[in-house]
Structure formats: structure tokens, C-alpha cells
Amino acid sequence: MGRRIGHYEHVLRVGVLFAAGFAIFLGVRWALIPADFGVYGFYRAGALTDNQNQPLTYAGQSLCVDCHTDVDELRRDAGHGRIACEACHGPLARHATGDFEIRPRALNPRLLCLGCHERLAGKPTAFPQIAPADHFGDACSDCHRPHRPGFDIPQEP
Image (cartoon, rainbow, N blue to C red; front, side, top):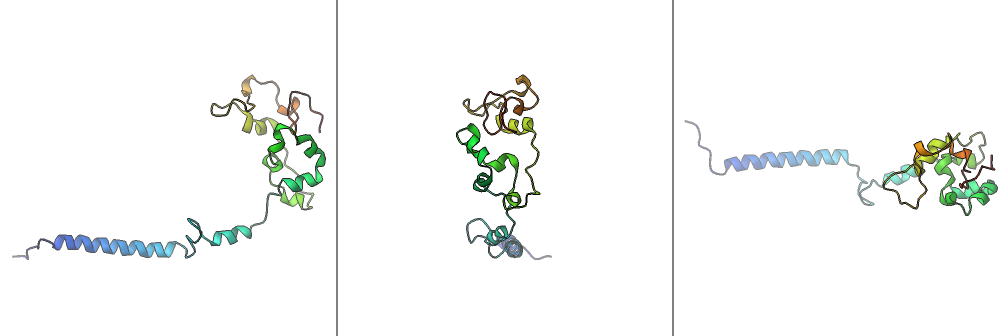
């Protein structure tokens, strides 16, 4: 007859399977996770260097207002004065550093404005909101100046 299984032999087999699985897990983990992972928290330290080597795409507010002082004056005390230029006009670092062939993209005022001002239940009631179906005009800029919004006919180009 066959050999009789001891009381602890089945536990030993499960233990060996568990140890083998854990060893495989450690091997796969070692192979897949970079050595510099976790140096600065839950990140790969080399990601900082990788990001520094990427070309800049956003210029920043200060470079925009260096040349466009008239727009800066218009926006200064307005509701849109706290919003960065590139939030609406897109990344323009190459334009700001002298490549004037790169121009701000053409904006669709209706779609752009609705991104922030469409009425949603979770927004604070003090924030200007509209229901597009109930609002007049095809373009917000027909009645509102984008850089200094209000209820007046736009005076800027």
C-alpha cells in the first residue's frame, strides 16, 4: 500500500507553494520596479530629470503681460484678472520667447466660456453661471468682453 500522509505534510506542501509564489513575486517586482522608485516618496526619482528635459510649453502670466500691457490693464480689476492667459489661449511659450509665427489659437467663445460658466448644481451660487438654452446670442463675445466681462458691448478687438 501507499505511504500514509503525516499530519503536517499537507501543511508543508502549502508552505512550499506559498514560499515559491512569494519568491516569484519578489523576482517579478525586482525586474519591473526601477531602482530609484521610492527615493522621493511614491515616485521614481528619475522622473524629475525626465521632466526637466521636456521643452517648456507654457510661458506664464508675467511673459504675456510684458508685451500685452493693454490687455493686462483691461483685466487687472476684472473677474477674469485672476485667470492665467494660457488657461484660455493655450500654451504659448514659443510665442513668448520670440517665435511670432506661433499665434494664440482661434477661440470659440461660446464653447470656451461654457467650460467655466455653464450652470451646474455643484458650483457656488455667487459664481456667474448661465443656462445655455436660456441665454441670448451665439457667441458670448457678442455682448461681453472676454478680458473684462460685464453686460456691455465689447470695445476690444
